Length: 457
Image 1 (cartoon, one colour):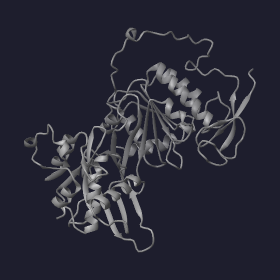
Image 2 (tube, helix red, strand yellow; image 1 turned 60 degrees about the vertical axis):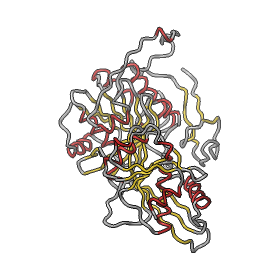
Image 3 (cartoon, helix red, strand yellow; image 1 turned 180 degrees about the vertical axis):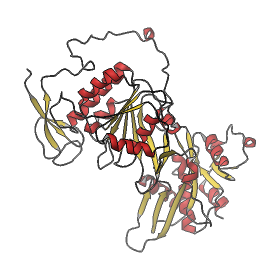
């Protein structure tokens, strides 16, 4: 019998230390170190956990001697999920889905499980009873499928069932509730989360069965458990949204089988999650009258162009230092654009409060939004509304120049499809652009002054 060995882990970030520390040197949190057992005699865990002595050593192969065949992906009835995963579910992949409590993670996975016809799906829940899952399934408008429910938290019992059941898709809800007898610490601890994930990863790779894992998040929005958890899995999806609104956003932060910048949008309804096939329509509010401080910008997430509404409010700062507040947009980039407008455009914004908001709850990182941000700020400052049929797609430099952006053709096509009459782009984007193929008026500009003269004057 091996000698029991203990060490200390940070429950917030997973940092390991030989002794107890009051403050974690990695994440800075206080009183997060707990003592856990890391070495003990290993019991038999089924066919998915062979001992190190019986494992056959791997041999190196020349790269040209490795046989490779394109893996056939499994398409789900959820087109948004297929896009985010890079074209469907890859056999043998391990997918981690994280999000706040009550955001809809379990509902999304249950919809997937019920919608996969002619596919044996095993849904393992460690948080809800069979009756609770049945109640949720009754509300979902999906046909009866080959989906089986199991309530269990022991990974050894799960693997015994899996060995005889042989599912084609395995769903674990959630990884923080799973418990392995190979580790003495309690469920949800750093050691248990790491060990259970390693067992499911081994099962997925050896059997070729795709495994979906639900993960909790911490108060700062990151996935709970050690950071190595995200390195172990093949794909990390984050389910975002405000519980007070109906729209949900599914993002990819890591994907070994596709792009990491894809985006899926859902609407939470009483009958489950509805796919939003044209998100530009919900991200642009319908206004009965013209309002100042509103501009429409074109962004690209992955392969999808989106038109979003930028809202700005500029008012005189009557109480000391002017405020600079932004929601969904980088605050430092907002400061830079305000400095450009004051230096190059002549707008006196130094004594003005500036508030910026990206409608729809999106977080934008595409620099092509710069021109629409500047237009919205100047529109609010001058109290002159921008026509609702005008869109913007360009980056703004420190010299006040309007810079080119990538994939301008798809941005123009999306604006034309939604009925916009005019779009401002950089003149450095017009090379090779066929103006005759678009019905929308394309306005190339090189300086901010040209934009303001064409829209606000």
